[in-house]
Structures are given as structure tokens and as C-alpha cells.
Image (cartoon, rainbow over all chains, first blue to last red):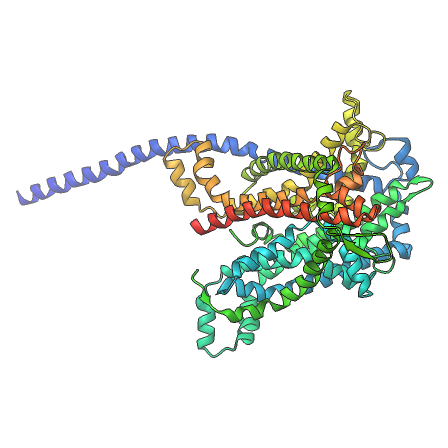
Length: 310
Length: 288
């Protein structure tokens, strides 16, 4: 009796256990089917979504391709026929640029003032950004907005006063003059970016370091700067970017010795018309530093463009 | 984050203040100086009061340039912001496509502005440029040098080419930071693609969108180099925006007084509009 009852109970529980997973399977099978179908539908729309970035990138690259294409053509080919790729590829345009000092020194000048500007902007912005992210003080919000207004100042407004100011100091046609002038919009931007990144570092880290006996400069250099290294990289990237692309101030403040490549390019216009091939080759060479810099910061690029505020 | 009150923090601002004082305050004071004085040369100046400001505010040249600038900025924002969001939504979230997309999309942002102008100047010409040639081949008479409408279209397309990536990258950064759990919850609720965008993605990218709008507004309102290279402000005056007009006046004709007055008005307009964006943005940040 006991045995049979036990067996019965066991049987029943077994059947329950057998049913349960089976039923469970059926149910979950149905729902996962539905889920899969929905996912597949979603997947189909996802399968076509690569088209959008692809078309967009093609749109971005076409004009650049055309420039590269032209830079390998002779002037004769450019003006006589429209060809999708150079029929008689020539390096003559690039040879001209690399052998003529007035051409390649333009690149050297641009890189010198861009690097100077990058170093000055980030170095000055670091303590200021720390102050804004950690402390409250009299007029802090006003000063922060006032700094940002300089980013909003149109360079056209400042072109003439800059020219007169730097003439008075005898700094016209020096690299440092352009570097300082570009600080007008790069310093506020660097402060803004660094403040965003620094606010993401918990304040407890500072406090713990002070308790551990770190002095402020030692803490700042040994602990804090490594923590916001990516922020510094992003700020430097932006300073590079805006200093590299700016022309109006750079052109106004230089004549010969510090003339940026962007201004040298206007030389291709002569009495005989425009030397299109040379102009295109010079343009292509200005793309290269930007491409190299992007490659180095590619992992931070998305967050960097959100100025550390994501 | 709660911040400690510390007035000594001012000392940390000294380097920035000195630098910005030198490269912003002194030049700006020079502009203010010129705007209220007149000169007959030889560095002799005398007080002119608000005469220059009145002259500028009564000149149709200024108002039409301002109008062109506002239309330009409006069109730019209306095209670039939706397009940027659309591209960002369709970008791959992981895989080898990501760095590929990012690097190629960021490239136009690092092209020097006059080279951007040069690229489009060449690309749009019907004799040597692919775009101009293709549009002509379809049968549309397109010439940005002589037709104002074509010049405007060229400038707009050029700016979309140049700057939409900024909006894309900003939105993309915000989109990848949304945790997967949000999307799973939406899928369980059977949310449509639109409601996922409206109730999950849009609120999350709202904040960076404001940054994007602020940056795009400021930069499109200050645009100088690209239209200068492509159209030089022409044909006629049809693409002469404020900064082109200003440089023409200050460095071309050396009309220091009117140029300075115009600079200040121009700067104040940008400042006022940016202040509105900035206030909206910081209020938004505070609410979160």
C-alpha cells in the first residue's frame, strides 16, 4: 500500500514534472517564435540601415575624391576633358610643392602655430577648468559664460584690432602671434571640454588624495591629469582642429615668414589663369594632418564631440 | 555635484584671464574705441558719438546682409539637424563599421575652411567639376557664378557636406550611451520604431542636440571663409553675409568707424541669440 501510494505520488509528480517543462517549452516556444519573427522583421529593416551611412559617406567622399583625382592630372587634361580618373597620372604637382620652399614652408608654418596654440590653450585651460568643476566662487557662472562668448565672437570682428595690436608689439608675421590670436576661441572651448570631463571624476578622489597627504600640485599632476587624459586628448584635438581650419586671422596676421599653407594656396592664381592641378595637390596635402589626427583619436571621437557631456 | 565655496579658485583662472584679456578684451576695446570716433588720418581722432551706429542701423546694406545671414543659419539648422539625427540612428553600434564610419565622417570637419571652399568651387564648375558637369548633363542650367539661386544652393550643400557630421557624431555619442535594457523593455512592450525614437532616443540625445544647435548656429552665423572662396559674396551681393561685408568694410575700404560699429552690433546679435540657447541648455542640465 505504502509502496503503491508512494509510486502513485511519484508518478503523479513525475507526470507533473514532465508536463511542466513540456508546457513551458510550448509556451516559451510560441513566444520565442513570435519574438524571433519580430526580430527578423526588425532585422530586415536593420539589414538596410547600413545604406544610410554608406550613402552619406559616399556623399562626403565624392568631392574629396574629385580633388585627389585632379591633383594627379596635368592642367591640360583638367581643362580639356572631364575624366573620372587620371588618364596620364602625374606627380608633377606634388613635386612642385615639395621642391619649392615657399610652398612647403606654408605647411611647416601652419603646423608650428597650431602646435603652439594647442599647448598654450590646454595648459592655461587645465587649472581654470578644475576651478569651474570643483569650486563655487563669486561670479563663477558669469565668468564661464563670458569665456564662452569669446568662442562666439566672429573672427571678422577681431581681424583689424588684432592686426593693430600685434603691429604695436612688433609681432606681425610671427607664429606666436597667430597662436595667441587663435586662443581667442580655443581657450574657451578647451575650458568647456575639460570642465565636462573633470565633472565626471568624483570629488571623493580629490579628498582622499588630500587626506593621504598629497599637496595640490602633486595631486594634480600625479593623480588627476592621468585620470582625465582622454579629456586632455579631446581638448587638444579640438584646439588642433579649429586652429588648423581657421584662415581669416592667420592670413591677416602673417605676410611672409609665418604664412600658413591655406594662404599660400592663393598663389596658384596667376595672369595665365588658375593652376588647378597645383591647387588640388595643395588641397589634398592639407587633408593629411587632419586624417592622421582623427586616426589617433578615433576611439574617443564620439564622446569627444559631445564635449565629455554624455 | 555639490561644490565647495572657495574664493581662492580665482587664482586658478589667472592664466586664462591674462590670455583672454590679451586676445579678446584689448581688441574688443579697440573696436569700441573706433566705433565712437572719427578720423581724417594721421592718427587724429575726435568724438563721433553714436553717429556710426545710426548710420549702420539705417543702412539697407546692413539689414539685407543680416537677413541673408539669418536665412542661411535657419536653413542650415533645418537641414543639418534632422539629417544628422537620421544618419546617427542608422549607424552601426558595434563591429568594424564603427571606426570606419567615424573616421570618414569626421574628415570634412578637419578640412581647412578655404580648402572646403576650393573643393566645392572646383566640384561645382560645369567645365571641370563632377557636380556641375553632372547637373548640366541632366539638363538643368546650373552656374553658381552667375545665378544667385545656384550660388545659394551651392553654399547650403557645401555647409551640409562640411558640418552635418558634427551633428551625427554628437547624436551618435549620446545614442551609444543608452543602455540595452531600454530597448529590451521597449521590445517587450511592443513599441513601434517611432515610439522608441520619440520616448527613448530623443530624450537621451536632447542634451547633446542643444550643444549641436548652439555650435551650428554660432558657426553658421559667423561664416566667412567658405562663401568668400566660392562666390566672393556674389553674384552681385546675393551671398554677402555679415562677416564678408564687415571684412570688406574694415580691411578693404578702411572705414574704421562704421566697421567697428557694425562689428559691435554683429557681436551683440550673436551674443544675445547664443545666450538664449545657453540658458535653455544650462536649465536643461540643471533639471536632470
